[in-house]
Structure formats: C-alpha cells, structure tokens
Length: 113
Image (cartoon, rainbow, N blue to C red; front, side):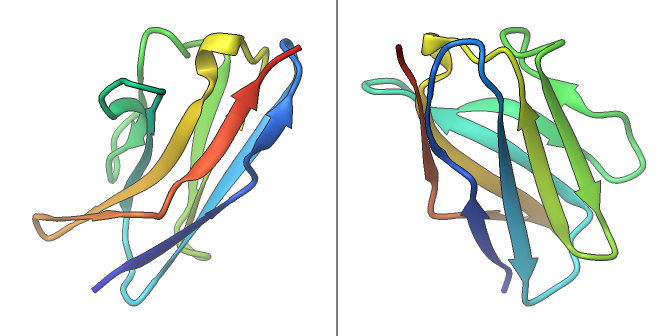
C-alpha cells in the first residue's frame, strides 16, 4: 500500500505562483503525477512523470507548471506559475506502482481576484 499526502493549496490572485507537494509513504514510488478536478468537471491529467522518462503536461499548463520528483525523499512537487482562474480545482497527487494506482486526498487551489 502507498499513502499520498498533499500540501500547499490555497487562494491566490491571477498571475501568482503556488507550489504543491506530495509525500508518499509505505513503498518507494517512481512514477508520480498530478491530476485536477474543477467544479462540475471530470478529473484530468495536469502533469505526470514516468520513471526514467520525460514529464508529460496537459496543453493547458505547458510552460507554466513544472513537475519534479525527488526519489530519495519519495516526493513529487508541482510548481505552478502564472496561475489563471481556470486553474481553480482540487488537485490530486497520483502514483503508480506495479500496476496499482494510488490517489491523495486532494488539495484545493483557487485562483481569484
């Protein structure tokens, strides 16, 4: 079993930056990422970093968001710059290990003037 705990959400103004963090415990994971779910919307991919491969980003966040994995600490971060109101959502940490998928509890990000 893998447990994921996110932190770093909050309320910010458009154009601001925010950094989300997710700590994994239970087992070592190497493929991690972030999804988000806006009000009344489905959960969608934001960014994902497969083991030994380049990161994948949703088109809507390319050039603004950066995902990074620290394998030594078993953590994944999402640096979000130039935030827009449409980035408002609950952000979920995601991990994949041996075919199993794990989710964090989610952290709210609200971008509003």
